[in-house]
Length: 372
Image (cartoon, rainbow, N blue to C red; front, side, top):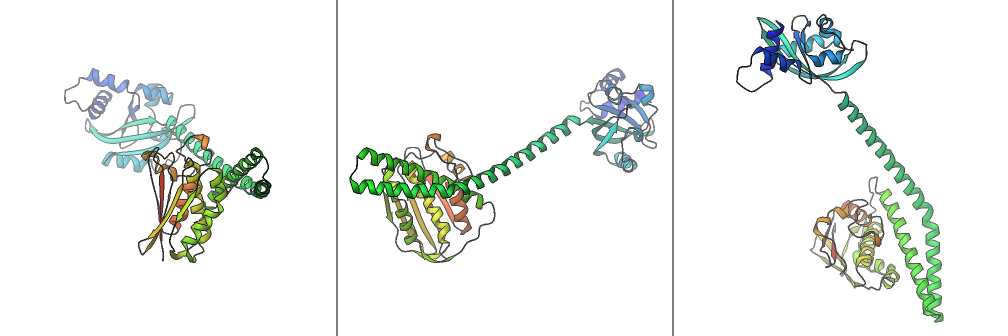
């Protein structure tokens, strides 16, 4: 019976139609890496087992052949009879917990199917130890959980740090603006005035970074819009005026050509959008003029911010809209949040934002906003 069982099992697991003698079948059965068991379908008694089974379960062959499949299950014996019935009728694949002779347990994946051998129904089962797989899954889950907690701690730290830094940086920026104005009026040494203006530029850059961090944190929850009738031309001109000092420091100029376009939008949110876009243009525009143009197709307001600076490759166009993604050298600074924030706020208005660029040819960012 054991020889016939081995022959049947080996024949069931090969696709080569050539006849194999009993010696080859026995060798294939004995030396398979997975556990191979031949089980009586009616009783669950183990009829034969290979060397992998003996090594894994830690029984001698004589001891193992006195066992049933129920003896190898570590717990939850309820489903065993039903699993045997399904294996005999149609074949089955399932996971379980088996135990060794010393009582230790290990997870397994079992593939079992019924065959008639010598007029008796047998279950030919391939049992695979999946301890390594479970360990890897546990390590992956632990890594995911650790990463999730680390990201939560990072966001909490950034929110707290940004909030605490915003007020003092704003105060320093205002004081430096007054100093620069006084130095310009007094006609003081040009070197001193330039140094003060440079310090003001760095302070304004720091304020922008802090605001970006707070904005990114606030966008982690649903965005609520406070819509009201407004003229987008007024908004764009106001933002350009706020950035006039920064444009001077960058050696650039904001050229605004936006006609009156009315609609219902959240003014504060759109200020964030166009402030981010113009700030980016000044940062990467290499001192060239920044052109801000507006138009309408009747249903939508369209505003384009164009610089003539370093540009980015086509492969980076979509990536730069993701959080903390950048496509420029680290020397330019920043966290890679400006375009991410802009896209979130534009899409909250049911609009869209499109970027067109090429290395060395500048960048155009187009914002399209439904007017209704």
